[in-house]
Image (cartoon, rainbow, N blue to C red; front, side, top):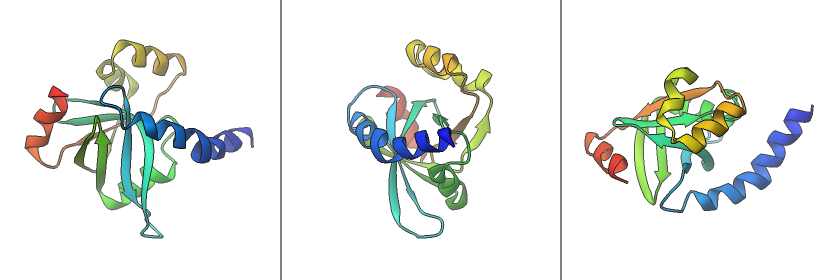
Length: 137
């Protein structure tokens, strides 16, 4: 019961605060823009990401059963707003922590390792030219 309370609190309070960090031109916070798989409504959710040469690694800080993740799985992709740019990405692919953690800069990697996060996914850019823009940012 307690983890559900934290999840609901974060959904309505913490995420509204974190979304403002996604508008900054630095850091690991981004907005995943997705469509509800049942409602068809557009949503934005604050997430933690870091670019790779071909896309992003996303930390699933609440595990793989969250709505935004299930929505992008159902849709086969989404857009990610990161460092003031929008990137179209394809279907997420689960990856292990051993592969994902080295992608993140040291301070973020240490935090993610300390909290014991094990759930990560990789998404690839749909348009090849987008990869160059993200890596240069």
